[in-house]
Image 1 (cartoon, protein in one colour):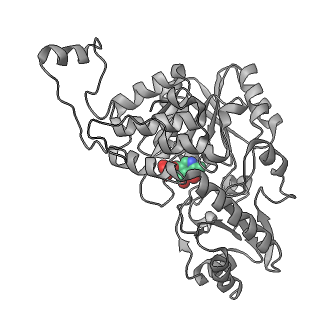
Image 2 (tube, protein in one colour; image 1 turned 180 degrees about the vertical axis):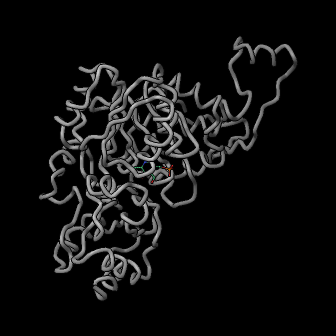
Image 3 (cartoon, helix red, strand yellow; image 1 turned 90 degrees about the vertical axis):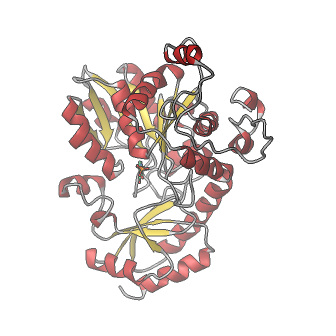
Length: 395
Ligand SMILES: Cc1ncc(COP(=O)(O)O)c(C=O)c1O
């Protein structure tokens, strides 16, 4: 079943059936094509594949049927012409920049993006002559003021990690049109099950499939999603540079997509319950979750998102020491930097995920020393709360 055939199906059905063409073996579960290259019938057809007279599989860095199924399914879920799978979320961001920008161009990036995105922009992308400026995600005037004649891309992540700040996609898309540049959104936290940025005017979506698309913490992967025209140079970069997705990982992500809607609803429901519970705790200074009415991004999240997602953060009374004691006292929760897993994860962003940022960058991004991030998994909420009580018991 191709994207075009899936036009009348609902999201949940596309997530299960989209993009797949059954082989002659009549398998029910999608076939996994673990092959690095493909056989040519004879020298004449081989030559025709190489000079583009014939289209088909040549080598798995260029195309692979399992990866293609994942790409077609994800494109349909995001409402795009095309998705291109990558070896990780960071490879997706790198491919967008390398495919679409040149030396002398300028990117405006929200400060509140994932730590490695800032490292990639500052240490690698800027080395190739692309200038990067940072602005506050939610301050549209800041974005406007940062526009330069050579600005070619606005890049943001929404909701942000770990404070759950929410970008106004319509305002950013209008600014991008005015400035004749592209709006790129990292949709890792919501996935298309909760938010489809292209519907609000974004040009490109990037994903870390490592997170909710997998959903069980097994594989690294990513994707870039957008129009055929914009994806062509991204595909060109990937095919020659090589950070493409492996067939095995694509197969895992296909299985992840099948349950994505159900899982995102369950993650969101437990995260909201947990946020409300945390708010009532005396030792908690502040809870950051866009599902809470008083959160600064609540109204926008209600407009742009179908639910609020599974990640929240909270500040405990005290400083780094209190946050570390709290985390170390938990027993069931996994102390790990990953998120989007069926297992609830807990982490101290200032000393881990955001530790490579300078103090100034961290302060500007609101990553305080007493902040703890929880990516709420699919365990029973009472067990998650009981485990967090161990933390409250030691601060
Ligand atoms: C929002 C966001 N974008 C991108 C990435 C990078 O993804 P990956 O680890 O798959 O390279 C992450 C990883 O945590 C992330 O949280």
